[in-house]
Amino acid sequence: MCSASSNAKRGSSPTVREGVRSDVFAPSLTVGLLPRGQTPQFYVTTEPRPELTLNSCAGYYPILALKSRALGFLNILSFMGFATTAIHAGQEPDSAAGAVSIPIYQTSTYAQDGLGRHKGFEYARTSNPTRLALERNLAALEGAKFGYAFASGMAAIDATLRLVKAGDHVIVSDNTYGGTNRLFKRVLANYGIEFEFVDTSDVTNVESAIKDNTRMVFVETPTNPVMIVTDLKAVSDVAHAAGARVVCDNTFMSPYLQRPLEFGVDIVVHSTTKFLNGHSDGIGGAVVLNNEDDANWIAFIQNSAGAILSPFDSWLVMRGTKTLALRMEQHDKSGRAVAAFLEDHPKVQKIYYPGSKSHKQHDLAKRQQKGFGSMVSFDVGTLAAARTVLESVKLCTLAESLGGVETLVCHPATMTHASVAPEVRERLGITDGLVRISVGIEDTDDIIADVDQALSKIGK
Ligand SMILES: Cc1ncc(COP(=O)(O)O)c(C=O)c1O
Image 1 (cartoon, rainbow, N blue to C red):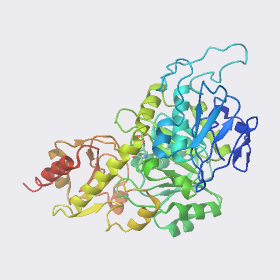
Image 2: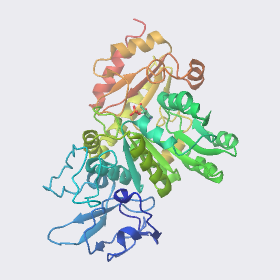
Image 3: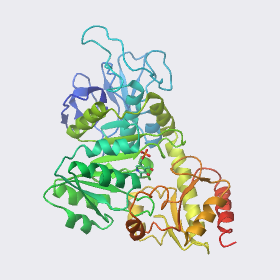
Image 4: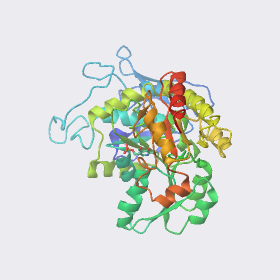
C-alpha cells in the first residue's frame, strides 16, 4: 500500500515493497493492503509518526491517518473519497493548540533544541508547516506521493523545466497558456533547451517530433483557450518509449475532473491561482509527482531558487481545496449550460468546449475527464463584436484569470495570449473575435442572462 507523503523526509530513499512504504511502516504493525477495487480494511500502526497523513497513490485508495489521544500511539488509517481527501489530507489538528484549521506559520525560522536537533523545520524557504500541509493535500488530490508549492503557476512550470538541461529537446503542446509559451521560447530557449511546439492532440505529431535528445513532453489539456484535448495515455506511451517524461498542466480541469497520473503522466503542474484556490485572492503554483529522484530535484530547486508559496497563500489554497469537489460540480454544471446556450446563439460563430458534441475530441474528453469544466471560448467574428460583449457584461467581470467563484470574461488575443506571435494565434484559432469565459458558481440563469444581454448589443 502506497502511503504517507514523505515530504518531511525529502532526502531519504524509501523502498516500496508490495505496496508498503517501508520507511513509514517498517517499525509499525500494519494490517492489510488495499489496491483499488478491493475491500477497505484498517491499517494500525503502533507508534506516532508525524509524517503519516492522508495521501493516495495511483491505483490505490487514499488513506487517512486518524490520530487519537484516547488510543495513545495508535494510528487508524481508512479509505476515503475525493471530497474527504480534500478536506482531511495533510490537515491533522495542529499539535500545539489543536487548531482544526492549519495555522499560518508566519515565521522565517525555527528555534532549535540544540545543534542538529530541531522539530524537522530549520528555515522557512526550505520548509514551512503550512506549506507542507498544502503540499501533502495537493499530492493526495492528484494521487501522487510528492507535492511542492510555488509562488505562481509559472514558478512551478519553471522549476519543472529544471529537470532538463542544455542540449535537451522538449516537445510542447502548441496551444499552451501564453505565459508558458513565453517562458519556453523567450527565456529558457536562451539556455540551450530546444523547444518544439506541435499539436499534441494528434499523437503521431508527438511521435514524429521525438528525437534522440527528447527528454520531456509538456502538454496542457484541455488547452487555453481553444480547448484542444490531448490523449494523455497515448502521449505517455509514446514519450516513455523514447525515455522522455510527460508533464501535464492540469490547471483547467483540477484534480477533481482529471487525474493525469492515472493515465501514465509523470508530473502534474498547476496554477493554484485558478480552481484550486478558487476565490481569486492568491497567486500560486504546484508540482506533484511520484518519481522520487525527480521529486528530490524539484525540492532542491524549490529550496535553491526559492520561489516558494508563502504561508498565508498556502493557507488560502488549502481553504480553497476543502470545497473543490462542491465548486467543481457547480462549475461543471453551469459550464455545460452556458456552452449549450452559446452553441445555439445566432451571434456566436463557433464555440470551443469539450463537453459540446460538436467538439471533435468530445469522446476522448469523456473518457479522460470526469466532467467538462467551466472554461468555454466562443467566437463572435470580429474585434468590435468581442469588445461589445466584453464591455457590455454586467454580472460577469472583464478580467484575466479563471477558476474563481465569480464569472470572468476575457479576450485571449489581447490579454492572456498577447505574447503569442500573431500568425500562431491565427493558426490556433485565437482570433480577434474570440471571447473566453470562466463560468463561476453564481446562479446559472443569472450568468446566461448576462451573456445573453451582452450578445444582444452586438451590431447595435
Ligand atoms: C493553464 C495555465 N497554466 C499556467 C498559468 C500560469 O499561472 P500563474 O498565473 O499562477 O503563474 C496559467 C495562468 O493563467 C494558466 O492558465
